[in-house]
Length: 305
Image 1: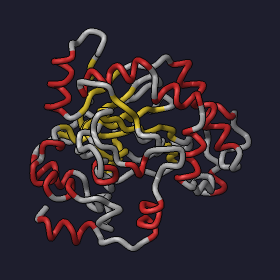
Image 2: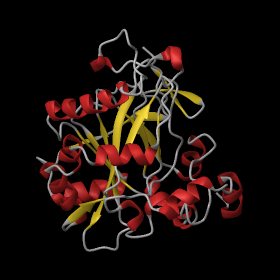
Image 3: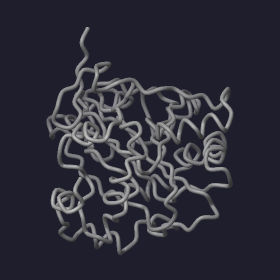
Image 4: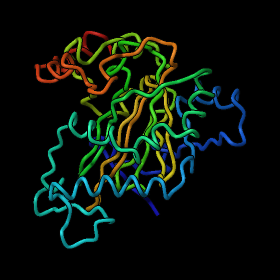
């Protein structure tokens, strides 16, 4: 049976020629050289069951209790279902202060126990080849009905320190295809023209929009690469290169999609201090967020991409 999902403004057939299945990797059976080679070639590693399911469930309950405090959950549904109070809008009226939300979850042991879990840090250090650290800022993602994240690369938000960064996407629930999981364009981290133009800018410093405003397929049709996704389960993680083009599918359900982005680098490398310390997300970055930015479409014309 044909299964359609939305990437950007277009419906795509999952398993069709334009949207395929992510390939799984297993750090328990694959050696470091194999994992690094796959990360270098594809730009990502999908690890099933890296974290115990009950650990993720505890953190998920923390997030749902936080949401309940804003009155954005369906009052007639069990808390654990995470259903949206659609009477208040597609996100239940939720308007998060991203900095305040990050500070709240950065202080939660049940969140940090996942971000800094020994099994995760061991994997990151195997991939990077040395002692690693995680940025202190926690990017919590709470996606309502019909919500999605446009295509972008993470490096443009956090590249004023090390340029060799890994992102880890952690779902705090089972995420079927219609609930808006992450989709990646495998191989896009090696597109030289994209790295030298868009990938070299800084969203805050250069006051330029960072989210692609056109169909993500446009770039993959030009330079190759293949968009991939999967049905994610609690305990899975998706590790990917900070230059890798990625987006989320549209959440077509009446439940919030809950996930967390965290970033890692070698401890010995310079660090983008905007995302470190007890009060991360610097005044510079906050001010830049409030300023009008050059549309990315204008920058793309200048860059020839």
